[in-house]
Length: 429
Image (cartoon, helix red, strand yellow):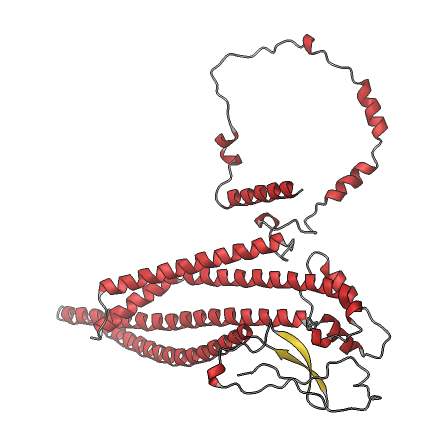
């Protein structure tokens, strides 16, 4: 557990030393144990951030986390422990089931050999014995299939644990990526030409006494403690570009997190039938072994409640993904790899630019075209005779009468979104 960072003055140093020639805050960040009764206090005010710290003689960078980041870290660690326990337990169960299946396979082979010997004799007295052997073989075969199904069930439980672990790890790494991007230690994925601006900003150098590393840390960090008093005005323009890049990175990270969450929820929902089949087989096995099992009403009600819970999780994940998508669209951020027709703004690489139309029309001889149009004889509408048509019963056909022109479901929702977006743009314009 961590307590909020506390400040203490750095030890005095010679003014001629390189350390005194740099505009670092004269503070030290100390990490301490936190008592249990303050476990719910925030570790730092504001979001997680990267700061400059000191160990007494050497400068370093430190991560000051907030409580949500620590919660994600704890969840990832706890999930990793659960996965390790599940792997150990599943390994034991699968080994036992495999050994049991092998023993049953040998027993089945022995029974089949006895049946073959009886068939070779062909005596009428062996009919009753043959029936008993067939029943024994069928019983052994059912038990062998149950053992194999238990192995498959253990594998599915492990896969479910792996999905949960991957999801928690995805959230944790997304938070770390956001903190490191805001601290200037890594660059978020480029969006709509922001890569060139980011590269240009990060490659800017000055001729002061600061080292390149320390200047980069001060410029790219979101903490005021990292900026010297005479450097703030020089970094304002860079800060604006980096804030926009950080915002785009957060929107992309949020969208991908919700996208991953929806995919995992859909996988779990799709696999519920296989899980239910395994639960039914497991309940039947316990009942056959004389163990106490719940009633059919309670058992069916539990499966129904699980289906409802999984369906609600999928619906919540879809709503969260739509919200993340709407936030990206409102900010004009194109998520890499997204489909243009899914509601995002036009990508710069979609093959069409409005400015390209001006390029095509720029080299046209407008005067020549207008002169050619003047040569076309004008048509007198009075001389147009009424066309001869056959008289037959007919009715007007609307667009809605054509199935190929009617959009439904997802297509209709996308069309409605585009119409609403265009109407909003028109009202704002």
